[in-house]
Length: 382
Ligand SMILES: Cc1ncc(COP(=O)(O)O)c(C=O)c1O
Image 1 (tube, rainbow, N blue to C red):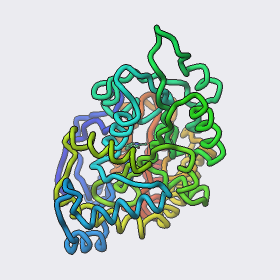
Image 2: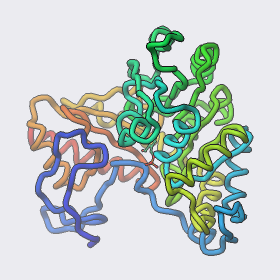
Image 3: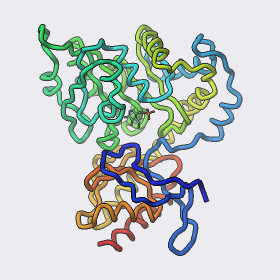
Image 4: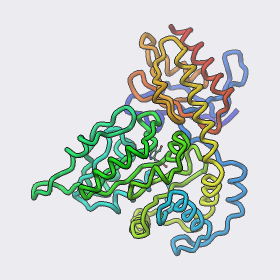
């Protein structure tokens, strides 16, 4: 039996509490018949634990003081990321949130306006850091359900030079798109929208926390997906399973400026090679395996589509994220409580909507088991 925690609202709770007041057991809990039941945790791919090889690499990592630029393992990771993404340089940061924040700080000045999708992670889940610490206005334009923002909407949102207006200096994109259910942006789309931004003297930053999922889904190198943008953030601690870390990539000049911002916000880490070592394994060995998560997401969405009353969008299940809605005739509080009791952990997104993320800790059999439990749940409540 694992450690017990109360089931507080998940990290993406949007103000509608899903706290059922129950106590959940992480790892295993007891079924009604008293048998141990595996918790099937589909809240996020961030729950993945490091592999044995990562732990070994962490143990053996050659270390130095990275604030002096002397940690060989961090340097190796930064060079590896830059070369995989075909950017001049990369900066190791503690999180995707920090990489995105540093990108905004580096590309803009206080008082500027930045354009981003209405469903952007930077806008929803990064504590408003761009506004609070960067002093920029976040101007959102509507995302479609595939994570794209329209050319005309972006064009309209770009300020003309005028004494009354802030300067529009940055466009932020997201690939894959979290709130749009892991949908991918194609190289064509990114090229065209980045060209528009550049023609108007904007820089383009890509929140590519899951860019390797997009690359695997589209079967193109990640470098092709990020070629049109000036900077990109990639995460190591999601489907790639490293315990910590993200890389912010761009030109050498951009990365040097971002390095200084990183120091200012307290992100200068000393013997960071301990965690960078796992990141090297993540980039070298874990990208290909994302296809397994994608296959499991397809299996999940297919299964859910056969449970009466559940709504899914199979064409939008392009990577490892599955959005679904519970049956309209089932009280939402009861549905949430039943998921909980049946050992199914998913993110609640408000209304009838849930997010399930397939990840390395789950097998095909776990997906089938989750489907069976949800099917029983719906039959019992319907
Ligand atoms: C699209 C996207 N960007 C950024 C982040 C932030 O990453 P972190 O949790 O490492 O701060 C996430 C986290 O899930 C994400 O999904």
